[in-house]
Length: 269
Figure 1 (cartoon, rainbow, N blue to C red):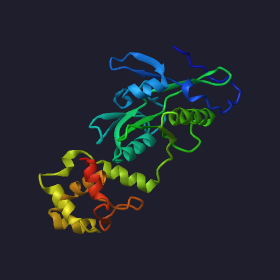
Figure 2: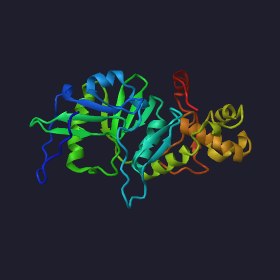
Figure 3: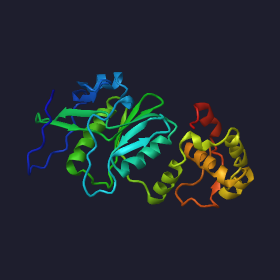
Figure 4: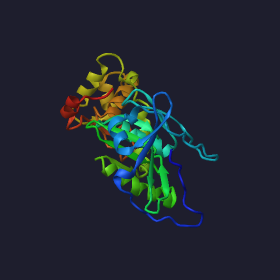
């Protein structure tokens, strides 16, 4: 197996883009054995969304958030997460109706620089799209996180993904208000919050036309019972409300304009 070399101390690495066919992938098979093969072959044959992390997320002393697990409403399984920034991006992807699979650090990419040096990088996130394409992503807490090495890796991984019709991105941190709203709605993502039989349909009927949150909840029944179903519907996109302003009792909730197309594609929850 290729040994992963690092840049010499004190030498600022040059940002280079290797040929797309020069990449290799390292991952764990279902039995936990390490496999290495050409990236182009692995991308066609391997369901990375079903694989465990190829290496553990580091636990860094002093950080408020550490490695953990995110329960995905998309897959009904846990996804390894290494930071608060990554959990927030998982929330965004978990609500995306075009995403069908999620995994944390399932693959390491290897490549050679023009000088023959071996470089490697493990992107934090893998997301499979409905059309079979995929997103590899990192979730920096700020734009310069990871330094020059991370930026060099981003250039290389973008090339590796473009070669396949996939995408690599360094996902920008979320706005504080959006992050807070997603965290709140995420608490209601589990199917149990849809409530008793018939409640979800009643909630959607009440909010066919936009109306204030608490007003609609009271019309649908006891707000203590109804509100979890409303938040569940908001998480899954069956209802909509602006998420760039704080959620409150008078926020307008309504049906998405494209509800019918979402239903045809198969709604979640």
